[in-house]
Image 1: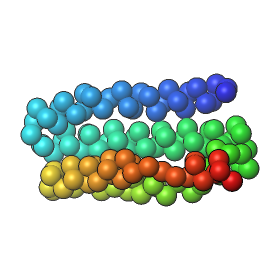
Image 2: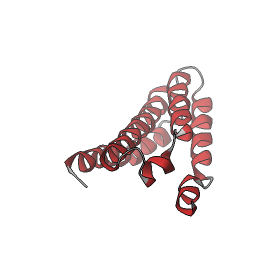
Image 3: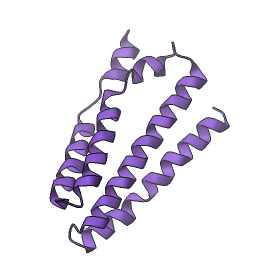
Image 4: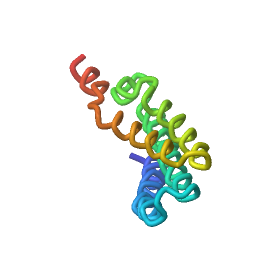
Length: 122
């Protein structure tokens, strides 16, 4: 644990703390374009902050560490960023499609990720 890890973690927590506010804004405005796009922007920035946190942790512990092996290439994280960016753009065309994409990403993350278990078993 060092200052870089703490700052990266605070960065992630900051973006996650905005989720209730943008969720409320989307709910109040019944899927209007700007609130829906901002919801996606907060999700996007949360994903970027998560990516930064994982990279800082890997740098701290080394490329051969357990966490580096468990994170791997982080396919889920990379695809999520693309989904969130697509949702932001589509919010101005069809906000309901954006919300469907955000829900798809959330559902995908609800599926248990076995990467850590596989690394710990090895």
